[in-house]
Image (tube, rainbow, N blue to C red):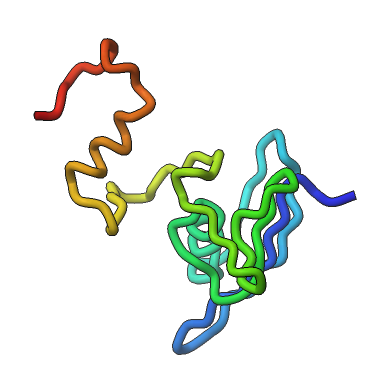
Length: 117
């Protein structure tokens, strides 16, 4: 039986290559730890869809989020996952307004404390 979360990725950098091979439970708390520069943040950014791996796949509860062989890449906003950044961050491909609208779209208009012009 497949694990709820399967990650098999490879990311090449000038001085090293990050290879990730994870099978994770789909519930509870899981800790990802290792030395600085070992690929923890890269792995999490790939799972969240903020980076595309050079090779490999990500499958969550039988839904493929990335598969480089099949050309599949599910956009970050379509992934059922939360991500807390180490620093304040925006989606680089969106304008500031679009970033604000992205964050507001799930809040009903009548419950929003601000309205964008």
